[in-house]
Length: 245
Image (cartoon, rainbow, N blue to C red):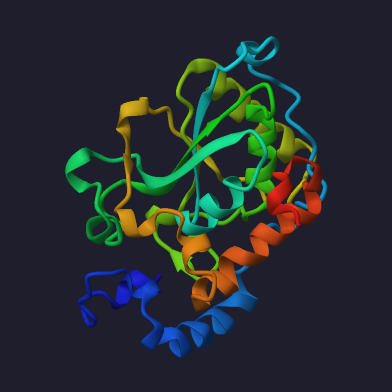
């Protein structure tokens, strides 16, 4: 949503970053919060996926796997996952469109086909793909199409980008499982969009590790930190020891 101010406030950084607009952002967040900021309604006690990746039944020592997901602002998603034990790295970026349009200014127009996504590299001996999906669905609202909280547009869609058929099967089966269990008040609209690993494009440097670097940013305080705290409460056994203090 904040990107809509771009034509009027042409800046080298995203509008969400600018302290000058903190009061405006806080006011807008509060206004839209009651209507559309439901980060995880009905998601406090989601089950693990009933289907697991065959490759994770006997993971090899030192092996890492990759997952790519999108659940609104990538600052929030990155902040949620980088604190989990077994997550080696979480990188904000763009997925779903072409290399030519993989930049913040273009993605903010909502016409690039990209979603703000996060590439998660993880150790399957410590955390599974299914556990990542469980956290994913617990920390955002997968029932709102092209919207998360105050952010709207196709770039903020809820999406899973499986990198092979096995990930695709697990993702689709889990969505069906959640819908059948009526885990949310409304049906899950998360899309499953197969993607080649090289079709994920890292975002600009200033987006990386943003929550850690800018904890007092008004948007971070309103949108990201509650999600992070929810993980530390609901998944405290899966949080890295230094993050749980």
